Image 1 (cartoon, rainbow, N blue to C red):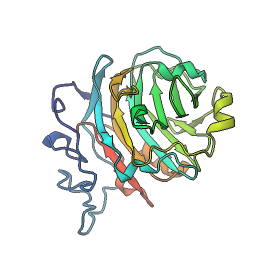
Image 2: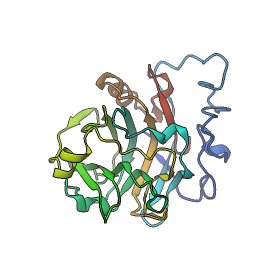
Image 3: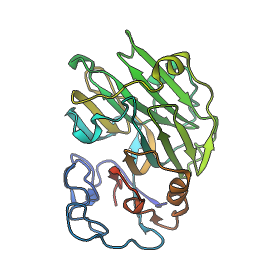
Length: 289
């Protein structure tokens, strides 16, 4: 993984991060995946893909979040079609990222952990639009947690959180996390290529949140890296540390595919995620590269 972090304000301030175009100060284009990618690896708009390198692709930068007000906005407002069905009753998806931090927070399966800091990502419909489901809410510090909800955080509906038993990830070293979900069931959390058991299922999760539609649909929603959203869409509970190579697939990757991501790490190298077949890669933010 990279030795250099991009501090907020160096290549990211006032700019949306684009698909493979972060350093070019371009905005996100959901229909322009890899278009004009500096590496030239793949152009999903058209043309013939370039065969990937056998090991990995250059990875010289990550993005540092200060835990105060830093976040990367993927979208805020009308939900793009790419994300409308994530969390429905038959939803399969995978979220993958690398992170490092020194934060000592230890998450539990308690619903109260939902409001804690250190948010890696959250997809949430806005309460004031009448569509306030939460397909996923992921935090990382000493361990990993993932939440899901129907309705409002504080009034009505059901919310639940699962936490990994694997702890000690706050050692300021890079760790890889992959979370897979099949038929919107109980998530499987991979940490550094190993499956972590969970601290237990909250009653709300096992009774009301497995195989239930928690998607945001086409309503107003927010999706951001490094924070979570309030009912009105403002950002709170910021992550303190570094994040790299963040990706979302609309399929549940196999353990072999996840292993290929982890094994491709090297000195300033990382996996070309577009080469995972069948890919179904919906979002990939290289966080500076």
